[in-house]
Length: 395
Image (tube, rainbow, N blue to C red):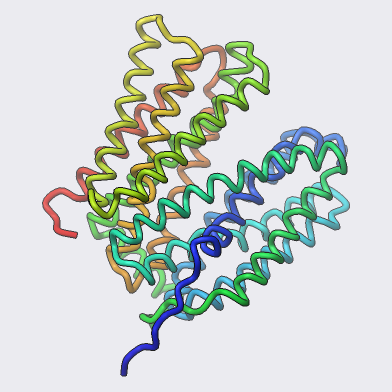
């Protein structure tokens, strides 16, 4: 019996779905120093709202992907959105830092559904190269939304307090839920019958035994950890080590983020013609070369702050080439397990990213060398993982 034609969601809907998790992560960051005084606690305690959020995203991605392979993308996404909205409501009425942290955990668990399922939906409705093209455009939108959200969150906190930031997240969550109710149909026409924890673990193990999947997943994981290393250390390098203002750092950060968006847009234009594996190779070579030049400049004594951000921007451009194509590769290894593949790779991403951020926080002191070394090592590992994963295999 023929399957009925799938109604394709628009790119805007997919960007909205994928952005809610990263948006909620970033929107509260400008308020973090103030939250400590608002709740009468230490800054280290308020930082737990970020750590817990990252853990929630890891757990959520492991769960939602396999469930969506069995029950469909739409019902699992709607369940995630309900959790997201519920967690935001709990944050909004928090009377202490502990309830706020608990609410953030549920926000993350719900928001992670959007990240996993947007990728799986794109693979449901596009072929391998078409997925890379759509993921490139969607990723560019995903980067833009948290950037705007962080700016809006800073102003809202300054003008109206932290509750206004949570109110913004709630409104956006309700808006995305309404859009999905009206504009998102089911796209998974290849359901599995695997629902138990043992089945999910078996599917994950099956994917991890595939060299091609592992190559894509590790390339994405190492590349993401490179960005988290930059994110965790760049502000300290600019403001503490080189004595620049936070506003100057913000301008440099826009350059780096803009470079990543540019890479995604270019990738969206040429991925189908060039091919996803070649795009990943080009991107990882660019990133590794930029990190190597950064190291050479530092060792030679010619290193200045402008070199750090310009070369980080070049690395981000390369990452913009490689990341969406890596995601397309991940969900194309076994299209029938696209949700599981997306969730597993996403959990690996967030786990190593959080570790990298923690390591840089404990090693960065009076020199940018730890940031440079870690970014160089991770960039080279991403290149090696990709070359090994695709060596001698046919997609």
